[in-house]
Each structure stands twice: as C-alpha cells, then as structure tokens.
Image (cartoon, helix red, strand yellow):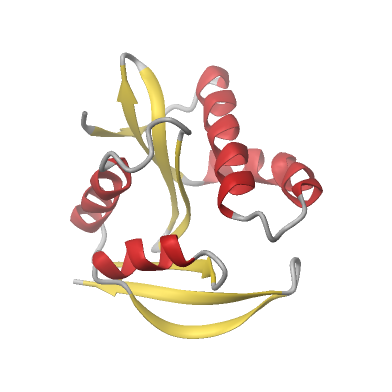
Length: 144
C-alpha cells in the first residue's frame, strides 16, 4: 500500500471519505453524541474540497485518508477493518515528507490517538475546551 494525494476529488471519492470519516468519529468518540457527528457531515464534506487529501487505497478502494489545511491536520481516519495495520503511520510519513510542521487537535478522552501521535514525535503544546462539544482537546505539534 502507498499514499497518494488526490488532486481532483470525485463525488465517489467524497462519499467514500465521508463514510470513513463518520465511522471513524463514531468509533473513536463514544463520549460525543452520534447526532453531533451526523450534524457536522455537510460542513465536513464542504471542507474536503478545501483540503489537501492524502489517501491509502487497497484494491482501488480508499481505506484511509488525511486532510490537511495548510499545516493543520484536520483529520485522519482509517476504514473499520483496516485499522492497526500501519495505514495511519503511512499517512503521517507522507505528511512529514511534504510539510515541515504538522499541528492537530485530539480529544483528551481518545488516549489511543494521543499515544499514536506521541509515537510519531508529536508533542502536546496546548490544551483547551472544544466549544462545540465541551470536551477537553489537546493541540499537538510535530516539527522537522
């Protein structure tokens, strides 16, 4: 498997990304009401068009993706059934080769994600409360 950057996002790509995004959020954030994620879907679908999208495919099917906005990792998700197979690491390696700095936000109640980013040399540099969810969020940063 390899990472590729999607230059032209097709409708099929967008649907695939959104399905992975929703499944990932519902799975990783059980402490946030599912209705919140469903309510964010239209906004996120619009943001995909503004982001640099990196994908990993298997058999021509997207199994993981990362969305970058400048130096901000707006989200990274792996399709259920494909997690814990190194896809997230592949995506981060690609981002680190294209960017000198990557920032992201992660919920404090998602320790698996925090540990994953720490293993990839991200450090916490700020914490705050997400006004939309009232959950504590950590801002983490990696710099070359």
